[in-house]
Image 1: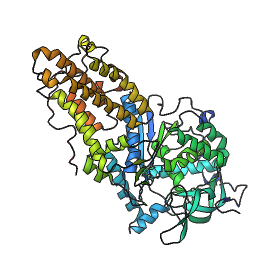
Image 2: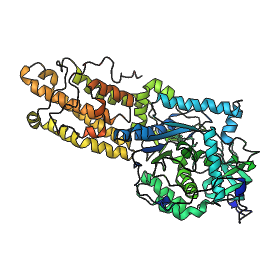
Image 3: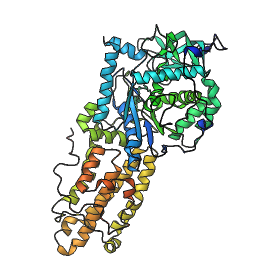
Image 4: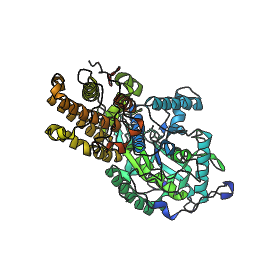
Length: 570
Ligand code: MSP
């Protein structure tokens, strides 16, 4: 039989005995594949449930990992600005700690496996805390609560008749912890001159495996998967959705969901069969259930958005929904898939050894600066080259020279001697073509940014925000408030310049909260924007009620600390 194919010795399955296993699978609901509440990050009733992938602990975090977490964080913060209360938010992240890859890394480091996992998991967690990733739960797959979930999930699959025992013969990519079909591998010449078989997608080495496993009848869910995948906005950006549809239509083989324990002891044992451990991807995907309180009654459910990199699209877009269908649970409302950070055109990855350490990058650019660089420079639809020398220039130009400069101009005692936010003189505004243009731009800006953020295109939202700040600086430059300040007769015009600039800063401060929360909070504090007005709906108030004060008139002028101190660049 052809290599790389599932060889099913027991086509009519020798089902796992349900007596050995316990829990019953809930009946599949008619709503399983429907999408009544829309897609693309729509909220469940009153809440928001978003996830990051859980990170392998075989090595330390790099900026690609942080990017996955920041996309989820920015999306979550945006939802909260739109009114979702933090108490009704479930934002989970965590670490993926089982499997052969981790086992071998611990052995190579001469470490006991659990101690090795503890150390690296702590590293991820503390990085996310220091980067202001506002997760509400951190799931570790070695935790007892998670192992219990995985156990129940496997049991329910068995009870539902979704598993059988079979023999797998084919390629396995250890670095990706993935089985590959014949069409997914290629021959490659190694520097030594020898040829090796590698994964066509990731370029990583594959090994030939032949072993008896428990198999999941994934192929049975093909039609339902296609139906789920055809909903508008199910997977963002759109081309990833097309990719998934293509994969399903090409081939949907059954999935091996266990490993012989003698080869992979570091995993959750198969219920009732101590000779096998559960496949690390079934284990890992179940973390989303653990975060929601466990199986069989997760709450909230389903997730609004799973954030993931394109290397793990197949697992989230095919295997996970198929498993959920088998478990009788609703499928996720949306997936946000993103491209990779690259260096010299190659994916940044631990195995290639070309990774950028986020802590070193934060020491160079500040943590706020790093967040900005990742969300400004990374685009979900494509791979993004890591900035190198231009990164520091970008931060200086945008955060110091554009945003910081406008704030300095508004608050400088020489230009704003009263230290206040003047009211808007509508009559005067109408006589200023540049001012009017800026005010008109401001009227549509919140919707423009919201549109980009809702689509997870934070880079476009940031560009739109900075575009308005640049426009405001140009307006200030043209009006020359330093000249106006010298002539008392020009005070109304000076105040118009200040008022418009403050409004731009207020909008930019709120709009950048999902991107650089600490820096934006300092900006809004400095402007005296009350916390109740740090919401998306407050942005559309704009100048429609000119008599209403959105900004405290008693703010203390003069920033003691710069908003973004300029980086010293070589
Ligand atoms: N453990 C699995 C995920 C299980 S989720 C149920 C895994 N872990 S990982 O540590 O390898 O990757 C975690 C995330 O980091 C993925 O979204 C992956 O795409 C992302 N990145 C890893 N390298 C990356 C880049 N170079 N650039 C951007 N993101 C990258 O896969």
